Image 1: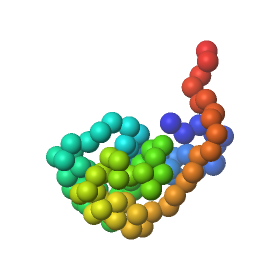
Image 2 (image 1 turned 30 degrees about the vertical axis):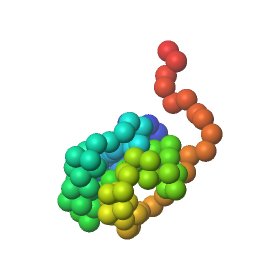
Image 3 (image 1 turned 120 degrees about the vertical axis):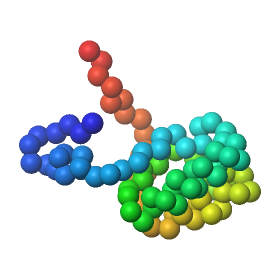
Length: 95
């Protein structure tokens, strides 16, 4: 959801083909799940945008990718833009 005044680019941003993978590493992944993730990213990474969210630093990605995650991590980091969000801000409506 994009919220803002007219003319700031909301429609432009909403028209992209993008895959969003949230909370990467929140739950453990089986070997098959890691393989499927690699295949998905491999099929999209040069043609579509991928947004990953995680609370794990790159140095801790071994916890959920294990030994066979190096190729997937290389694909993710090949041409990435990193955005860090520091602090906590609640975006949900209270009313």
